[in-house]
Length: 602
Image 1 (tube, helix red, strand yellow):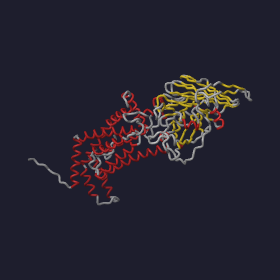
Image 2: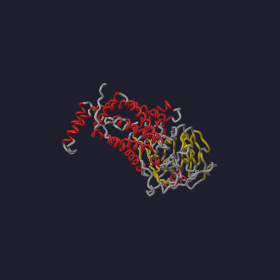
Image 3: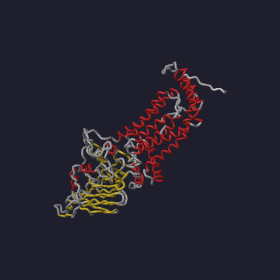
Image 4: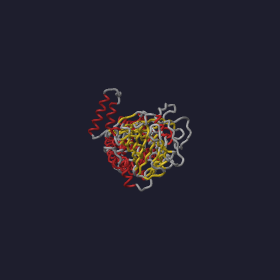
């Protein structure tokens, strides 16, 4: 939709603004890429050093086959405290309309956390547990202590569950374990939301042990480089949130509260702790490296595609505890959906989880763009096939209608510039004998600026549409890859508006339409060589930007271009457009030396 040419640019001096706009476009785009790479690094070199494993990384955890008897064994011990443990490994499943969580009594931890409303890349219900990372670094809701031997022991012990088989929320599930010296009680409570309440207490010989409830790292939707690059640690203190990229997370470090909430997330999903006692909460930051060469998806290929070497990615986790030794906290595990996050608040204040959504550099614009897009989707097209694609199209039409007055103003400014162009050329002719470094050249600029001012010409008038559309464009780009609502949202042949067009149809159409925008937008004062360069370079740059990025961006841009072509075609047929063409034709004839023909009456 964006117009990148200024139709009122005239003469050699004003032609520079074309190159300035081009430079701004390219600089902002690649600047965003650099900013994104700097704060969310992609996969690292196979030779990169591994992070030291967190406590408990050496634990052994095996998947149970079928549920078996969990009869408790209680025997005496040297300390006089009865030991409590199960005879065999078993599972308990808890579910509501949103999730299905499978616990194992080995460690009293989670084997799978399936979100029923979301699918993975293979179209199966999404399991938020990163199985490969969990097998190496630990499973969700396991315990993290500052003694690696104790951590490993607590994660491999057979607890006695309060229930086995299946439970329907609302419900609660308790795991108990004791070896005679160390006693553990873990209680989880479930309701109809994505939030689970955890109450954990560990003692050794009657004294409390600092045991933190743990999400060791990663999410089940991470199957490509960009998904791993979106990993971050999220912290909110005193009403202000902070998002830490992997390079800023030091594994094993502990942060002291107060915490409104804290945890880890990737682009679309999050595991966030909301402590019952924010002031005494502590957070252990977990950071590991994982080789995913055999499982990562590359260039549309499935997992297991050939790799020349290791592909290491950051696996971020978080563990929350309390200085009292007993940890009580709510745990949100689910999508970073704005409507859901708004309804979950920190203990003791009104701060919600909505700040988990990070729209990047143009965040404020991206946020309201999405809210407008969501409103259109929910109230106009929710029942249509490919509804999010249609919402993007309607939003694009509305934006272009709002920008239309500025485009008309641009043409008016361009016409004024054309009318005084002969006088500007005469001024430049008088000063062309002076070198660019000669002080006399500054007098030329003063005369031109006075001429423009006397005739009501604003030299920046033609930049207004670009100044509006460029921020919208980049905000749209960052918004599309940040909202889970557009994840796997299809439209005709596009399976995912947040991913690239697999057939590159839209980028090709976008390049052609961008060329037509350049062709139909009047630019009579632009040097022909410069005009040709822009006519081909702009489509090339925009084509590159949409070739491997969100197809929703290409849809937005293409529809905007088609609307611009239609609008410009109509404006070119108005008296304003006809006068611009006539002046441009006269100027072209003068430059080529062709005499003007005067028709007389017969």
